Amino acid sequence: MHVFLTGASGYIGSAVLRSLVARGHAVTAIVRSDAKAQAAREAGATALVEDVTDTDVVARLAHEADAVVHTASAEQVDPAFVRTVLGALDGTPKPFVHTGGIFTFGDSTDISEQSPVSPPALTSWRGPNEALVRASAVRTTIVAPGIVFGRGAGIPAMFVGDGEHEVRLVGDGSQRWTTVHVDDVGDLYALAVERGEQDGYVLAATGDNPTVRELAEAGAHGSPVVAESIDATRERLGTDFADALLLHQECSGAHARSTYGWNPTRPSSVTSAEPDVRRAGWQSVSRTRSSSRVRPGRGSPTVLPRPWARARATRRRRACGAASAHVPRV
Image (cartoon, rainbow, N blue to C red; front, side):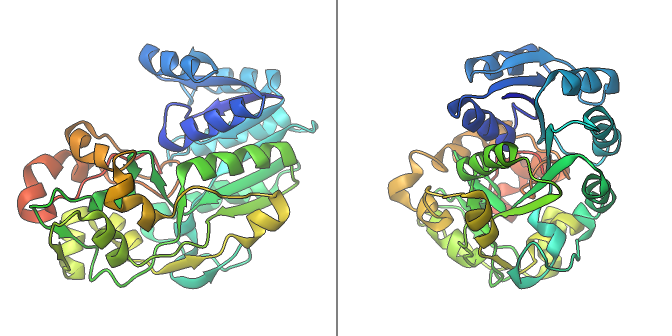
């Protein structure tokens, strides 16, 4: 199958690209620079330096492809992109796989695809776009990832310690996050493309729902783990992002397994944070924190707001301790 992919240079998009190529699909990716195009080509894609907001380009590539996967999801991108793709695919059997996020469901100890939505301010913009996707006659699937980790990135990487400076929790750390490894997410997107469901919706979560404190203690590497007040977390991370991370969310991901045949096999989030496996993953975050770049509201629900990212280098000792993140778009 020939797949048109957005976000191929991003955290989730690059995992989707790897999975699609491994499963024998041809991928055309649009990226924003020559360097990102080269990386996508090295991963097996045909890469074009184009703008995802150029609706003429998007319509042409959607017409030429057998399927469309959109991981470069963003508040300013999605309205025009979604309408353009739905228009291009209307009347065809071509599948369109769109990106949602677990934050949509708010506080819940048992999130499923049928759960009521209660999004925080950070991701409330998703609703109208997802409604448009689900109401169309096109064969659409929305993949909603949990808190994504792995390959040295993701929100849990904010808890990687250096053995010296304190690691700050989000609030008191008692809330649970429903987590998923980025490579398992990539596999689920590929399965969604191949299934080509009509009005599909699937949560990318493995049933691994650790507390924030468990994640921090696993990743602290000897650094002191320190709780903070909700107000302090909001001041440090920004109110909208903090309120999203303060949500208590648990999910089994049963639908993805039973309906899509998904079989997540990567280590759990806590295991991935422990010292014996960090060398292959999260440890790299400590070395690259100064080059981290993030975009709010894009891709999966694993975003850090840009103001916090810019301030991180000067604040990490007194406010964030060893907390850091090199994460994709949400």
